Image 1 (tube, rainbow, N blue to C red):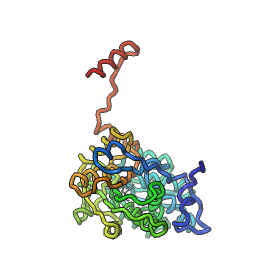
Image 2: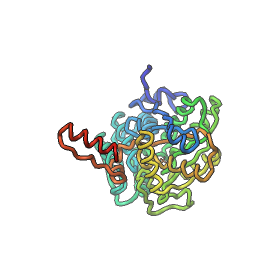
Image 3: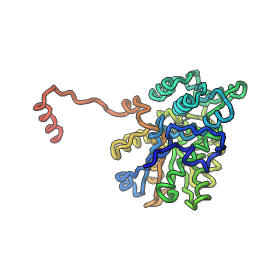
Image 4: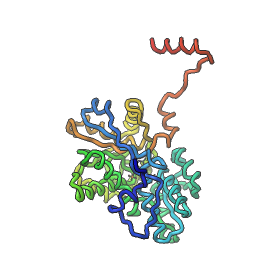
Length: 354
Ligand code: F0G
C-alpha cells in the first residue's frame, strides 16, 4: 500500500499548485467512506458517511488549511489569522506550526468544545477569546488582516475551498461515481460550496455526475433557511453556531446549480442522530456533524428522498473533540463492582436477565 502523501500531492492537478508551492502535508485526506447497514435498512436508502474526523486534527478543515497555508507560505507570508468555533483554529494551528508561521486565532467566548481549545494551544497558536460570537470574531480578523501583514485563513480565503473540494473527489473515487444525494452540515457555508465545486469539476473531468446537495443548519442558527441574519445564534452544536454565514451567496448558487436545498434541524434532532449513529453503527462524530444525518432523517420522513437512493452524509468532525456534550446527553456512569470475579460474574448474569 502506498502511503498517503496528502491532498496537495494526490490532487495536484486539480488544485492551484505551482512549482513554488510547498508540498505541505500531515497526511490529510483519504478518509473512510463507511457504509451504515442498520440505518440504511431502517431508512430505506443506501447510506454512507464520509468520516472527516479521521483527518490529522480531527476535522475536514485540514483539507482546506493545508492548501491555504501552503499558498500563504508560497506568497511569503509570515503569519496567519482566523476566527473559529474551534475546528478551524485547531487546523490553522497545526498547519501554521508545520509551515513555521505565526498563528493567531480568535474564538467566541465560552462556546468552543474543550478538545478544540486544547488542540489550538498544544500546537502553539496564540489564542484570543472575544466577548462576542463567531460572526463578530470573523469581522474582527477580517479587519485586522486588512490592516496588518497577516494572511486570513477562514473560508473566505478561496484556497480553503479549493482544498476542501477534494472530499468530493474521494467520494467519487470510492463509489465510482457521485452519490444521488449529499447531506452536509452548514455553518459558515464554505464546505457545501467546496463540495459543490468538487463534484462539478470531477464530473467535467471524469463524467462522475453530480449529487443533489442538502445543507442543514441548526435551528437556532438557521440564517440561510430563514433568509435573515441571526444576531444571537444558538445551538448545542457549537461548531455551526453562526448567524451570518460568510459564504451565504456562494452556497445558494451552489445548491441552485446542483438541486437540493437547505433546511434546519433542532438540537433534539441533532442529539438523536448523534447518539443513534454511535449506538447503532459504532461511529462517533461531533454534534454539528450529525446535523447532516438528522437532516437526512427529516427529509426521508417528509418523503423528499426516493427509496433506494445512494446518500452520503459528511461527518465533518470527530466526536472526541467535544466530550462534554457526550457526557451531557448520555448517562455515562460505570457500574461499580468489587474487585472479585465471582461477584462480577453474578452481576453480569443479573444484567443479562434484566
Ligand atoms: N461541521 C463542523 C464540525 C465544523 O467545525 C464546521 C465549521 C461546520 C460543520 C460547518 O462548515 O462553516 O464550512 O459551513 N466550523 C468553522 C470553525 C466555522 O471555525 O471551525 P462551514
